[in-house]
Length: 87
Image (cartoon, rainbow, N blue to C red):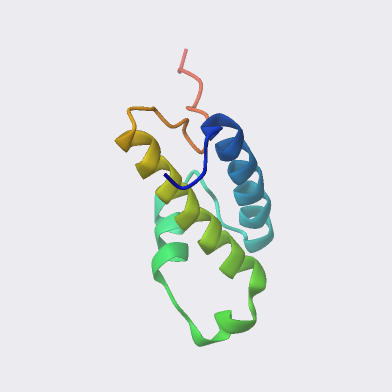
């Protein structure tokens, strides 16, 4: 176990930081391809881009926490709330 005994609180704190860094980096979390690009694209100029590196680390950490939760039978909350139903 990673030490995350309070999964809901940990995910809420991670999500808060993820949203903050996503806003700084201009990454739209509702667009999966932007998240995937942040996780997979490595550029030389990113060495000085601390915000993007932080976002990438937070996203990876969230994935690991989600995986641990699923292994233990918990259901992680989504990073973003589902869109409202169309009328």
